[in-house]
Every structure is written in structure tokens, then in C-alpha cells.
Image (cartoon, rainbow, N blue to C red; front, side, top):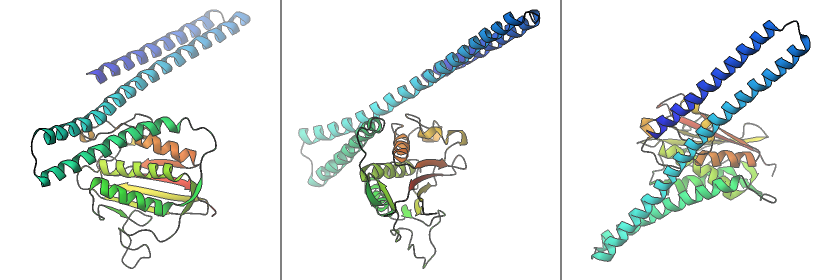
Amino acid sequence: MRIASRRKTIAFFLVLGISLVALAIALDVGWIILNWRQSVMLFLGVIVFATIILGMILNTTFLVREIRLNEQHGSFINAVTHELKTPITSIRLYLETLQRREVEEEQRQKFYELMLNDTDRLLGTVEQVLKAGQVGYKRGEPYRAHIDLGSLAAECMDLARRRHHLSDEALHFASANGQPPAAGNAAGPPDSKPIAEFPVLGDPEELRTAISNVLDNAIKYSMGSVDVAVSIEAPDQARVVLRVRDRGVGIPTDQLKRVFKRFHRVRRRSTSKVKGTGLGLFIVRSIARAHGGKVYAESEGENQGTTVTLELPRSAA
């Protein structure tokens, strides 16, 4: 209901702005036709009208942008509230159960495991919000170290498997073209670690955050059977390229760039149950830019999966 109201507001300001611009242009043309002989007045009038038209265009653009930003901010507040409230409520429920009645040891251990999972979820949400605030306000000289991006990716994959309870086949390494390497290939089986070294110069914690966010997104939007392939290559002496390909819900073409904006989330019926803050890919883009690299997404459309590519400068070390 609220989203529909905001869309009507955006449409109103767009129609109003376009109408005012059209009216100003009509008046300008009419005034020129009536006063074409008075060159000085004509010149001044054209400048005044052009200034008015430009002002209306800028004003309308600003209003529409602010309305969209407020809409995204509202969605972010709702998402964060849910992501914080749900695990806290769950933990409280388990603690009250343990406090009020005797629970068998097996059930007690299960409660402990569920509470730890909820704690991890809660901590992950808080870390994302804090990281999103930090990426835009870095001070001082950034920390940089020589890192093997292949080893770092393998660590992140192991962590993602444990966090989401996945098998090695569900989240695996693949060849650079996104397909599992053939038998006898030097890259090894799909779940093996890459042999080649891929050195980059960067902050290990920030790059770990970026890779983990991309992996978490791929897993969350797989919507059922998870099949996520990670490939890494150095196409030339200047770059190291990490790709994460899933076979999930995909991204509409017009959303491929917008998914990296702060608070933005793809709104579709198939993704309505996927929880998140809309900050994950924004953080990835910010970290990539801070390291002199870039990130972009590719998708053939709905239910066709998504490939997120992270490019970083290759280190000489």
C-alpha cells in the first residue's frame, strides 16, 4: 500500500515537471515569434526562459530522487528491524523454554545450536550495517598486504558451507568459463582448491567481507537446490578475476547496475521471502573501488541465474 502511494507521488511530480517544462517551452517559442524583431529583448528572454526550464528540470529530478531514496530507506529500516527482531525473539523463546521446564540433553544441545545460529545471523546483520557505514568514511592510510585471492576465496567458501550447511558439490570451484573442470585437469575436481596463485594487494578483512557477501547472495537467491560455482583466473598481468555463478532466480536486465546501490533490493514475488538489508552488494562495490577494482553482475533474465564478477589489480609480488 505504501509503495503504491509513493509510486503515485513520483508519477505526480514527473507529470507536473514535464507539464511545466512543456508550458515554459511553449511560452518561450511564442514570445520569440511575437518579438523576433527586438534582438536584445529576444536574447535576454531566451536566457531567462532557459534558466527557468533548467531550474524546473533540476527541481523535478531532485524531488523524484529524494522520493526514491526515502522509499529505499524505508525498505532498509523494515528489513533491518526484521533481521534484528527475528533472531532475538527466537533466542528469547529458547531461553524461556530452558528456564521453565526440564529439557532432555539431546533437545538442549539442539536448542544451543539453534541459538548459536541465530546469534551468527544477528551478528552478521550488525556487521553489515557497520561495514556499510565505514566504507564511506575511511580515514588515514588504508592497510594493504599481499594476498593470494585463490586461498582467500577457498576460506570464504569453507565458511559459507558451514554457515549454510552445504555440501562440497553445492558450492565448488569451477574452471574460468564457469563449467566444472574436466577429469585430469590441473584445476582438479569441482570442490578442490585452485593450484595457481593469484596475488593481489589489499586488506584481507575487507576482501574476505566482499567475497563472503557475494557468496551469501548467490546462496540465498538460489531458492532451493544450491549450485554455486566459483572460478578465478588472471587473464593478463594486470588483473585477477573472481566469478561467482549461481543457477537461481536471476536479475532483470534493468536491475543489473542498480543492485549495487545502497539499500536496493530486487522486488519480485519469487524473492519476497529472501531476507536481507540491501547492503551486501553495495559493500562489495565500495570495497572493490577502494582496491582499484570493479564489480558487475550478469544475468540472462528471470530464473536464468546470475554471475557476479569481481576484478582486482594483480600484485607484482
